[in-house]
Amino acid sequence: MKRRSFLKGTLATGAAAVAVNAGLLVPSTVLAAEWNKTAFKAKATDDALKALFGTSATTDSGDIHLKAPAIAENGAVTPVTVDATSISGVESIAILADKNPTALVCAYNFSGPALGYVSTRIKMGKTMNVIAVAKAGGKLLKAQQQVKVTIGGCGG
Image: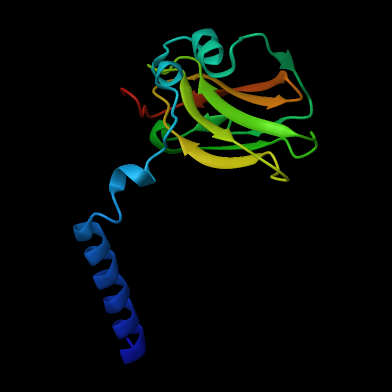
């Protein structure tokens, strides 16, 4: 390691430690201020959608491209990609797993010129449908795919 890199890293770490100790950088200010506790604790997909969007009425859409493996060898780290870039004005994207203990896996809000694209890994306990819901223009558009899990993640 070069001496300058070491000194820069040490200085940055020291500055962050001083900010935390002085109360200038509080971990609670970094956390999400407005997370929807009701939606994330909902057991059923319809309940989660109602809590998140105010309605559970969705329309199937070919404009949402949900990419997930047909067979997930390990449900603890199932890769999921939602591409809604062909839809203009995407406000949010939610990913749900209908048989998980809590249906809503994650929700993302977009603003301004952001494109509706999300790639993440989710945890699944058994074979189930993965559902992607995008809110655009006041409508909820949906795509879903069944994923077979061979080794459980959420309880297996």
